[in-house]
Image (cartoon, rainbow, N blue to C red):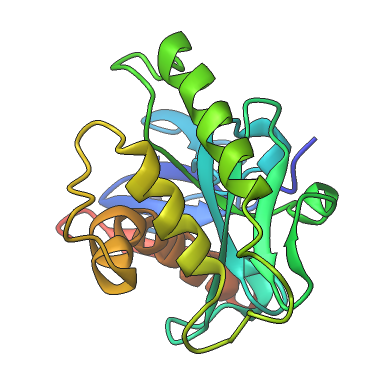
Amino acid sequence: MNLDPGIVCYQHCEGRLFAFCLPPSCTLCGADLTTQPLSTPPFRIPYPFVRASQAPCCLVIKPSKGDFLHDYRSSSDLHIGVTDSEGCVHEYDSDGLHSDLTASWTQCLSVPLITDSSSRLDPVWREYWDFTLHTLAQDSSWTMERYCEKSFNCYSFVLEFLQTLRPPGVDVKSLNKLSLCASLLLPHTSTAARYISLYRRLLTEKVVTVPKSS
Ligand SMILES: [Zn+2]
């Protein structure tokens, strides 16, 4: 089970209504929705977050403090880790490198790098991913003593992992924290940001209306 709050899109007359359940009337035209049929079937807005354990061989990100839906701001620091083929999160933080907190990654974004066009994990890459990750994890660099929030942190570990792995389609030579965020993470965080903002509006407004033209 995930923590999907279940935002549904209903289409009526000149627009779309977003809500957690069918509103009694259309906020655009006033029609009684309990008696009037919708023009198209309602659909669930895809929940962008997953449990890390459901996302093997991925980069995983979540806010350093709190969770995405309630606490995330665009300026928030994001914590990043890597899952192995079993969905176990390897993360480097002030406790050093560890892989014992997978259960706390209940609402994260996953960034797959070695899936084929039908989102299946390539078996050869999967094996190499685990090999690279487990080899790097045995390296004695990732201690709590060397950890530094500004300069030697969770991103350092992930960058080193990617530079060793060299996944397809990623230019690892020029990769740094900034380019990693811009090229690999941003597409996921911006989708999430739209979902979060809709979710928060619904908590207060109950129904969010978007006219057809926008
Ligand atoms: Zn309407």
